[in-house]
Picture (spheres, rainbow over the protein chains, first blue to last red):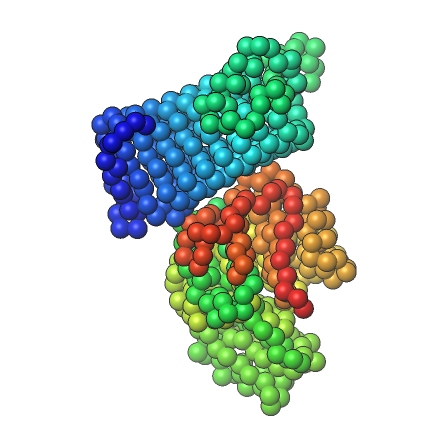
Length: 231
Length: 299
């Protein structure tokens, strides 16, 4: 984010959303954009493929910054459901709260939420990193496959249900663990990953030592022949 | 889908704006529910008087209906026509007689709601057309709830539009679908309730009215509904004093709330708040599943 680039301003109270997304999707590298008056519209700044920076000045609706590749998107307000869904790379930073399914199915990149995230945060992530400064709702990291979910606050019920290999770091209370999710011993390698993620997310006031690690018990990976009679 | 909104005014100076703001919220929710819309507005009650909203009024039946109503209600009664709805005002003790008159009138006329302060309007069409038809912009009051419908469980009719009112000054709007409404409807019919439609949401409204009639407070009635209602729901429930919000345990139907010193607002999506005064500094949050939120004016 170096520099003296001119920030281009796009006002959604006078221009339309399709035009905005079309222009952002066709930008060259290193452009900087500020989007004014988003007033909760859906599908803001989606499908970006270039390393540009976009600031959404206000609240975003559903699927903000969805399918992001390489771009760095900042939302200064709250985000509706599915923020950063299916992100491949780049970063999305929500300064307020995020609704349900934040970062759903994301393959890569970094999603940072300064406030709380709703239910199903990080559902089915496939490699993305998510750092939530506040708390997450129920069924977070459901069926999450790889990547990391860091929760500085509390986690809701059924955390990590049917989890694969995503690491879940939680600093506060966990209301309940989902099927096949268990607490793990934090190895030096895990701690290094957590330390790096907190640093990348700009979380400097919280020590990595305050977190617990949760992961898959790996009992649901394979069909157990003992259970055959149940079907 | 469906869109639901609610606005509870804390600062009395904002009461003249209730209808205008609710109308803007409803119009923004058109994409979530374009087939029909409805709203309930709660105004200041007049001492010793009650109001009843009736729908199905036409140029052909209005004369006979008004004459019959005034004959039943006597001199001080009033009937204010709003397109196919009419709001009757009459002395409280005449409630059973007026209700009997409305129920027996026929000619497509239906009871919509009654109480000390509720007025309830609904109709088929785009939300902007429905709110314009009834001139919601000009209405004042302490709180309002509204709904834009995308029908899933039953037909697109005025009767199937929300809100549903099944008790005095009570009404409910619903986003979602209930799976055990037939069973519960039969149970409630055995308890003496009557239902106007096959709609699942009317059963939820009826259940809450039944609990309230059994002596529950609104928050208690909603708490007990969590165990009785199976399905998806975000409810907003209006009463004379205020409104309450409840989401099902899975919380798959959206909900967002905004609170300032002047009001509390509810909507399916943040977009609906965009025109509210001072929204940029409001506390905006998502209600948690299974938790009853309610706001009331001092009675």
